[in-house]
Length: 54
Image (cartoon, rainbow, N blue to C red; front, side, top):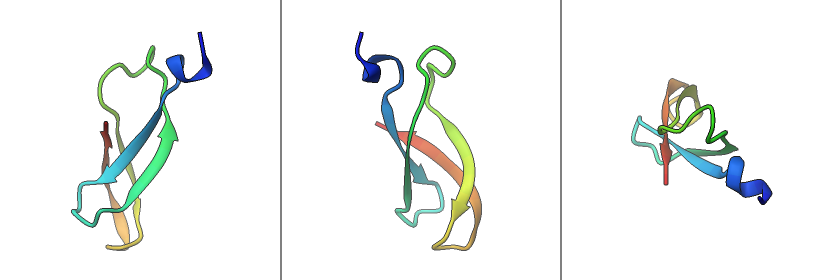
């Protein structure tokens, strides 16, 4: 198994519609569904939900 099989790189896109993204890795075993994290969006200068984009 390669390193990217278990922990793939995912792109998190802001739900505020600004187009701002974060890039991170996630565990397929612990989070098989799409990831949703509350992070800071510097375009709107507040914390918003970021959803996983494939």
